[in-house]
Image (cartoon, rainbow, N blue to C red; front, side):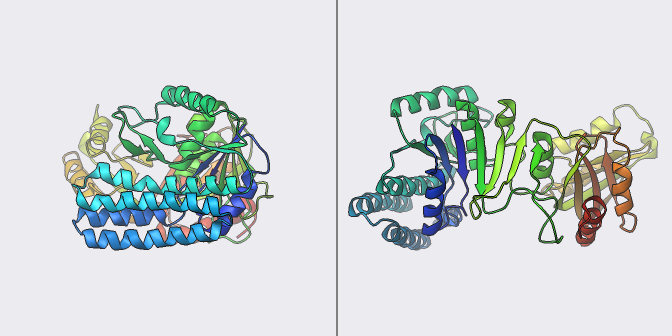
Length: 439
């Protein structure tokens, strides 16, 4: 059995729902995870924002616009009167439910109930459409088996036990459908998977049922060896190790969140990135197999801030780094890159929410300087230190570009450069030319 996840743009219109239906019914017995139709989650969040601000009129106007949109989808999607009626009645029920929130105290709990309706709508529309086409799907409610623990992390044991029980009770089916993103928390309240969303759901489901493969379908042709919006002639990367995919995901390749494939990795289940606009394309395969001696891709992460603390009086002082790190920890601010010397340390962060407080506290230990509007450019592949020549090729590409920091050796899979955002494009092009021969 394969797990096939389709994102919001893949089911973003009636025609795309029909196209996805053709993909998922090409072979029987698979497990389908769907996101909300593109734009729906943002509209539901807009409704919630109106309700937070006690603007019931604004909320109801937005609800009505979204309701009309979904009724148009129903009219266009179903030829059969029975399924058009059933789908229409479900849509009526959802929007009647949403309208009821204008009469109650509104909190984060109610917001999550509202946002969950997007995935419930998309899966029901797909379910009724497949029935109309003569297939035998089973619609499973993710809220019956997807749960997080006290730390907000997925409860893998609970998910495995309850999902397999739900599937056993459902009986035979051509395929199974469920919602991505949504879950219940430790207290049984409706919640959501924060990191990776529906991709995380697909990975957790795949690990729970022991899938042969997890497919992530988007409107992008897999991961590329560079940003095609900046560098001409990029090509899709056909294979990545899980570690390489995580590096790319963290450092800017938005197609896949770095944490969402961890359940698949630990269960040794391959993940394949595929394109709904070109189903025949090979895509990108991610698994635990390493390709030695190759550079795979380049990624960039914007909106980076560099912080340097210099203190000669702390020269080789015991506990200096611990004190510095504790400041970032106290403000729940993660560090991307770090470089140290005998008299100081430089770090980069992507969250400036508490930048003022962090700088204030760091000044207890030395002189602090800050560089804004920076960018991390990361070269990913088999960057083991014994692979002679990879570093020199990357360095040669950077010879005419000012580099604020270089990180190498913390991982066997990347070498990272911190540059000004204004130098991002020429950095990507220069690295691409030196490493892949395109620019």
